Image 1 (tube, helix red, strand yellow):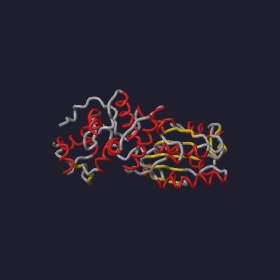
Image 2 (image 1 turned 60 degrees about the vertical axis):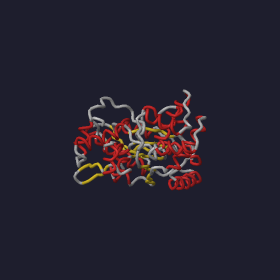
Image 3 (image 1 turned 30 degrees about the vertical axis):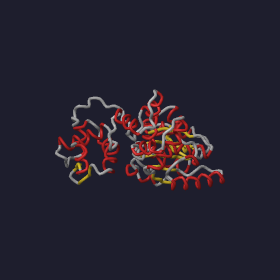
Image 4 (image 1 turned 135 degrees about the vertical axis):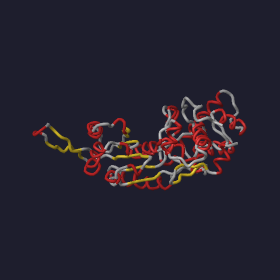
Amino acid sequence: MISSSSQTSKPERVISPEEGKTDTGLFQNSLRPKNLENYIGQETIKKHLQVSISSANIREESLDHILFYGPPGLWKTTIANIIANEMDVTLRSTSWPAIEKQSDLVSILSNLEQGDILFIDEIHRLRPQVEEILYTAMEDFQIDIMVGSGTWAQSVKLPLKPFTLIGATTHLSALSAPLRDRFGNVLKLDFYNEDEISTIIENNCKTLEVTLPKEALSCVAGKSRGTPRIANRLLKILRDYHTIGKDISEISTLEEVFKDIGIDERWLDYLDRKYLDTLYNIFNSGPVGLNTLASTLGEEEATLEDVVEPYLLQIGFIERTSRGRKVTGKGIGHISR
């Protein structure tokens, strides 16, 4: 049994879909597809983008604004980079912490060149007063700025060069209706199936000059939770074991590696098990409110709701009720062994 207080430190979760410290740099960039042809999965979105990009290129116009939404780790940023490559334009990336004031956004928008793509990650977190700047920028390619102060203040329209805004969010419902309605394309990214993840891993094995048999590919894909980011993270770890002489082509070796990094046979890591253990042993399997559970675990509610619970719900280990969270019979069977 894992005590709810036994984890004093919080190591980076290997199978968390959120971006971690190891998910940046040349390694991750080398594993991401650069064009739609090499992009695996999300077939409906791919077909839509191929038509939209081809049409925009023929008309020699900027692509219509796009909003991607879905769970973390599904390559929203990667798709934005692919679109920029396919359009042969510059991608300028930013995120909500870098846009605290209206002047921050005005500076970014006014420096965009014709056809540039502006990518804003977690766009739903923008402050309302900052978000308002985007309304006229997206619709009319101009922004209103105030010049002067007091009685001498006046509004001046600043024209912008036509651009494409690509927004990414894990919470579509948190995005204000006025902003959401200004996107011509609102596209949902779904989890990848095991075959798609296996293909992604197989392609990246070639890049890393690592060989995995079909059975090993399926094993790694099964532990990736349908998320390319997790798959690449696991592949990086396996590459490191391969470098020091481990035979990662053997399933028994793979299982040892996963055990070493804290992933059990049902692909749960320390935080998943800590969540289940707390719910089962401290709250008698529930129900218990999310706020109480988060306080007991020392985690943010958003972390539990967006990162931990989706997979536990997917495999039927917990359920959300009107009275709070409960462990199911399957969950109890796993955590009480």
